[in-house]
Image 1 (cartoon, one colour):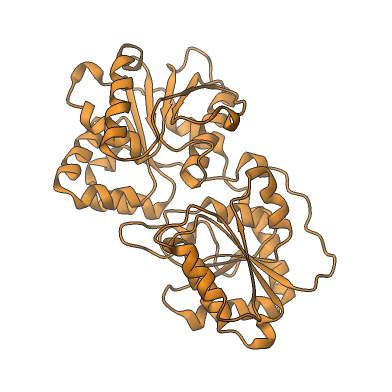
Image 2 (tube, rainbow, N blue to C red):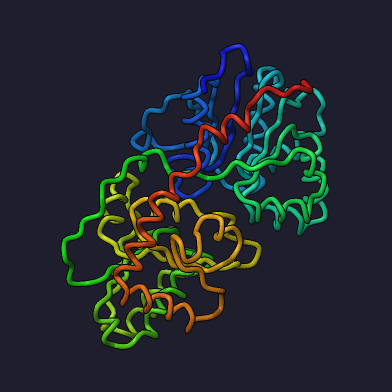
Length: 382
């Protein structure tokens, strides 16, 4: 469904997380922008700075701002200066804030009536809700911002319930914009059936305690020595926090009969090859402080490549992985139960095939275009 050129004003998507930044929020912002442009919306993305060699072409206008894209006060003030400078064009447009960085800036500017855009659209992912609610000042500012917003979206029912429990003001304007399969994974070749010497278990995600790589490793170490010898555990990701990679490497050294390969950051265009080399996908995320797993687009990527998934049943993961249909969900803090899930898949090739086949269909259930239409349709009240 294409949108008539006169139907909506220009949409300014303002984000601190955009290519070459990696992660679910950056992917969400990029895919919504691409889908919107494909539908005929007049979309312009304002994003954090990037080096010239990191740029690539996009089907929409991209404006790089002179800011690093952090959530600190200095970055907020830099973004505020840019928004104030362009306030006249923004005032008659739709301003879309798909993540918490620019929301923090808008909280500062919302007291100036002359700055308010024609439509303000917000998307919440999970962790920022708890961070906003924790501070009395930020909670009050977030409530005011939500009241000024035209529409508010979340990717999952879990995040929607979390938002409403802390900010009931969103109830009359909230809706779902589910995550979908990344557009460069739209066509995935059939998985090879050639015999392999080892079963490969793969995790893709930044190296952070919340992503649970250490929990996956410890569960694999609980397996019998004969099973460990049949495995390779591939860890893809960087941006290590709190010395986490060092902890992972130290733990891996305890069981030399289990091969663990740290592959580092891999460019998006090379990830398909890594997925195709794996047999099982694992990302055993947990809640970590105020950081929660609101959805997990990477589960859809793995499913699209025919991989059965092992995950913890936390946050919105159950809306990305269907238990006993596309993967196996295990309660957090149950290492023996997690090890049993891996053991089950290691020994049951037909189960791996059944879950992986169902995952291919499941991964394509949502469409970015549908979410874009829900976000930017003309406001009848305007």
